[in-house]
Length: 438
Ligand SMILES: NC(=O)c1ccc[n+]([C@@H]2O[C@H](COP(=O)([O-])OP(=O)(O)OC[C@H]3O[C@@H](n4cnc5c(N)ncnc54)[C@H](O)[C@@H]3O)[C@@H](O)[C@H]2O)c1
View 1: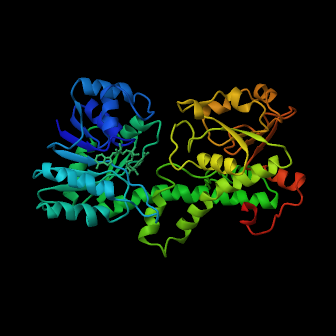
View 2: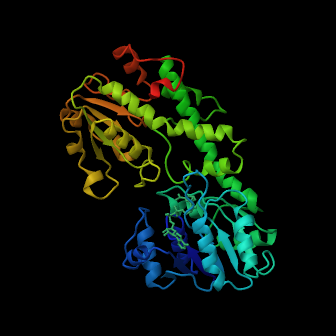
């Protein structure tokens, strides 16, 4: 049995702690947020992850998980603290530095330190390792350092922690082997060993690949919108090619990974990362594109009301981090629209609202998040409550045939161009892709 100290009890650290405890390890869960420690200690939880709460309650009561505000002596230390970007869009490593410094007084020869926080390539070698050396340790000899990125999907974290493959970068091969021994406790899939920088870069490349792919879909959408072609249909048909897999366009890219990690590559090689930077620009302006379409849809109406469905950055999670939906709601409010939001995954009246209340007298239902439950709503019944029965589904979750021969008018990012062209012939459809964002 190992004694493992986990620093940071958030989306990553908490499920990892619970899982290791449930696999018979002695886990010390450390967080600097005293309110969070209190909440967890009382059997509460701050993240919505199936089966996690009972697992934590059980681990705490069996003493296999202990909650602490500071580290304790352990065999291994896992750093899972936040790495947001700062104003300059480079990685803020203050929490990583603080977490590593906080474990130094408790380190003993033979200990293993694993960084799971997403960091720019070179961070473990250039920041973490010098901190260990300054404290008198010889990395790779009397102390072991590894980087092991996380790939879990929110909502399925416990399942994916076990079933996903893992990449482990070691300061030395011996460090990677030692870290692999820890992950082998619960990982059922393959564990692949490499060096620190490669593992750090792998994590960023995975998320950047997805961000760039979505940016391509979004750019196709904006171009098709001008050309009068249905982009959603085009992408669906192109994906029948055996070697094409374009992701779905949408109202923007949010979350703590895709919308953040590409910047950590850009910061390391700004003059070389043109495509990656541009993908961020393309995705970041999608909220403005959506708002421009809404303005066209509702122009001429007196004090139009918009019923927004979904505030999370993605479907089936209650997570507002970098959410394009939240940006769109703010832009719509700034533009003077009456906006009400319905997101059943959040607690609290301000966002949750009953869908009936939100759609009452609305001129538009604007779907911004692909929550599964939104597919099941009886929109024909909801439309009875609306002033005009129009839906703009920016996530393409509603089958476009569904409301044929009904009074509901359904738009998605594929056919929204029909509004531009037919209803508003004066709109500037210049070849400049940015013109429509004004
Ligand atoms: N959330 C994801 O889906 C995901 C996926 C892959 C990688 N990551 C990466 O994992 C890291 C953690 O992300 P998260 O989503 O779990 O963050 P989070 O914000 O949910 O949780 C981080 C926790 O760390 C605590 N903390 C901050 N400084 C600390 C310190 N010095 N000592 C102890 N605790 C400290 C905070 O109080 C917080 O509770 C980030 O680098 C993130 O990019 C996250």
